Image (tube, rainbow, N blue to C red; front, side, top):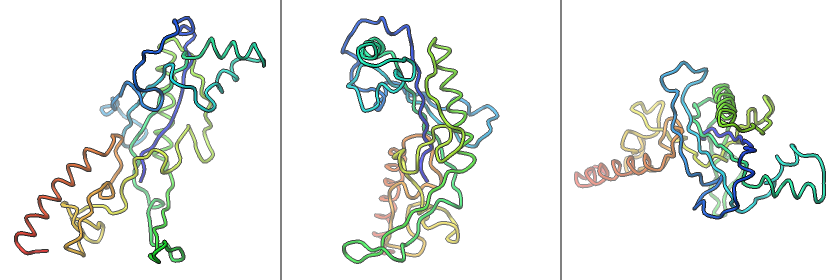
Length: 246
């Protein structure tokens, strides 16, 4: 599994006249200053799970394709285009949403029958595909982005497709950098590999203590949950070792 991710941006003409400055602090589109938690949990949505939004912006160092939106809005080239870029630099902000991906039968991993690593050990082969739930969630993300930008007096400037491999700006699998699952925990050995202490059902001295134990991928960053599960697994491991059960 992987967290669902989608991206949108807005252009705020009123920010063109803000004096040049360099005191935004750390952050930008990739390390946002604000975190918006999921707020539609008590509403009837077209999808399961939820998502959070990370807004960003500011006069950080320009990145590749920084001025694509400017070129879409402004016709011209040469000095006139450069002037438009200087005038609007810092007047664009972006929002990134990360949401929960629901497990589906097309997303799993297996031992590759043909490929081995440098020590001759077979490697894992991963399969990933977004489901209808993720597409509906990404659509809601884009609608929310537009509503926020326009309510704040900006112009929503991201064009997204509604079909193809990345509908509504969906990220590819693995690019949200919150991968989890594939060695899920559970009480039933027939449907899970680990018990609630991250201990393998079939191999008693094997404990797996990272995000692979998750049965689903939440919209929140999983680090604190990984630490909590690892702590519980470690305490249980020590107790079982003292009793000579391992």
